[in-house]
Length: 326
Image: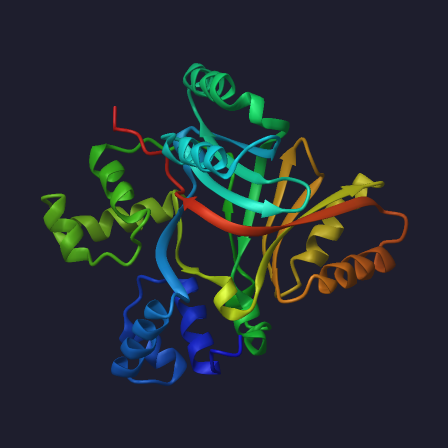
């Protein structure tokens, strides 16, 4: 992170905590004027460090389940690979698509509510591109805990706020109306969109929109308003770590140990593939090996195996199915 000083990193951290807070509020927390925060954020946007602002939405609360797929290519030209990526991005229920190096070439996460609709999509995918896929691994997501980006400000890691997480996974389903749905669609890819603009476009009042946002947060549908960071600009890489246990009875204890690492940004449990998966942001692959060695030493004879992949590029991140309200 040689391009960022401590103030820049504190600003990014605050944007990750809540990117809808004003620049004046951020300035008070990091010890800068609003004007300086304005300048620093604009500079980080222009330099490609900040690539957007997104809303973490728990669409499981809207009745969706989540499938994760890992695909390995065979005999696929770059043109075919681009076509496959484009096909997946355009599917209305795609959460994310990313390319990777390691045990698979492409990771896909998909929201599923109507199994027949998904079956039609998946059959079309296999009919069109199945010959270019050598392996498909899938799992059903059970829970995702996404953690604050504490690697940005390790000096603040002991702060209680830094240890909080957001949770995406099954729970009681919440009914929403058309206005809620349109509001979520408007902020899912633009979390910093001003309240007045949202109200004008939805033909509502700022007070109503503010109330709706708070209600969606209280219901657990909106989890957080976050910043998108281009890790490569900070000389960091995004690793996806998969762990298989020899002793499953230890998995919760190991989970608690893993989440204490400030470089961990996500822990996932799935039915299928690995027993536990984690996302970790680091600058050196050797740190993965060191981290796993530490776990093995602390919990001997507990880990059966592990592997990891490196995210090359994320093509889409949308925590809400792109569907019309019905």
